[in-house]
Amino acid sequence: MFGIYYLIILIPLVFFIWKITERWSRFSFWGPSIAIYKLSIDENSNKFVIYARRTGIISWLLKKLNIENDFQFYAVSEGFYYFVKTPISVMREFIPYSQIAETAYGYSRNINILRMILIAILLFFVSISECGFSFRTWIILIFVVVAIVLYIFSKRIVLLVESTGSNIIGARFSEGVLENVKIELSDIKKIATILNKNIVKVQLRK
Image: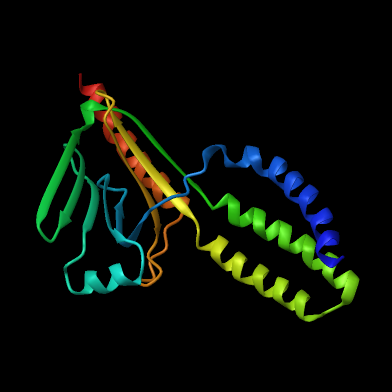
């Protein structure tokens, strides 16, 4: 009886929350990302450097041993560079400012975790009204707390640079938690502004 009761509540709740949040995921950037371990932005000279690695504690340990993939994104006076280094290879890609057609940036968090949080909160109130702070209620509460923490750390910030030949260089960044490196949307906005200023400066010279 308990299972049927909760199923009757859960199905319409899931449908309602899904419909409400469906339009929120239009610009979802959730997916594999790289963790920033060093960030330098100089607005006076219009230059920046982003150093990143793969996410996870194993990647962090391998980086300490200097045997992990290394990613770099940086702007210099002549253009934008994308650099990838592995223990056995190196690749550097360059786009001059005169060849950059578009830049874009933004951020999002995991919409599915948010949906689970909303459903769990509603189930928490249903459970507490039915049987108070029972074992089941505490399990739901713990789940909500853990999910909220996961949601907070699910932030992904994206930077896209497209050349006139439709070649797109982009990356999803997450914060380097182990290195205590925070990155905000304002940081990526500064980076995009630096690129756009350099692009406009080059265009005006023509």
